[in-house]
Length: 208
Image 1 (cartoon, rainbow, N blue to C red):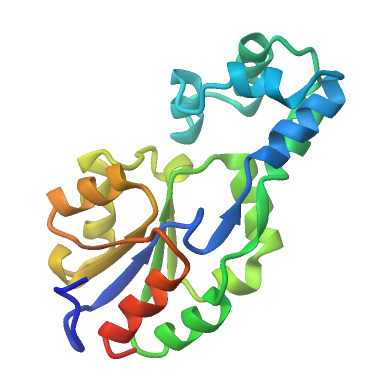
Image 2 (cartoon, one colour):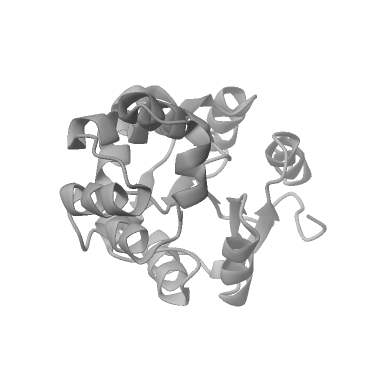
């Protein structure tokens, strides 16, 4: 945060999950367990978030059906694609505190962009559900569309080139340490968001 000062940024780049939109994965687990007639703990014990299928799904290399097939096998539950999708989209738990006030204020002074590791069903869901909030961003760089995901260096290089300003003039907000490290390695100025206050504090430091 020390490198942030008024006039030190030309663009702001936000992760979506747990920075702009609140995520509660237990809602997916609970939904799936209800459909499968098992205890949520049984699913938690078998769910591997960053599996190969998960990563391929996030860069648009496998279909939703193929990903849900992989979950069916990994979790040992025989629920339908529609039931998987219901739980999959249930994770969005609303907007992060204060973000609805902070984004429009920031957008008056600097261009805002979003960069998220995500997948087609989630994009379809949050694009409709949070259209007003996401309307403050000039562009959304989504892993399932660009075929690249954080924290890979190619992903950051792609987004920096697309934004078109020097990396060190872009302030990047993310909740995951590995994404912050990836961004720093490519020269971006970073804010590790560990509480809802961090975004507001960073904007204040930037004079916004």
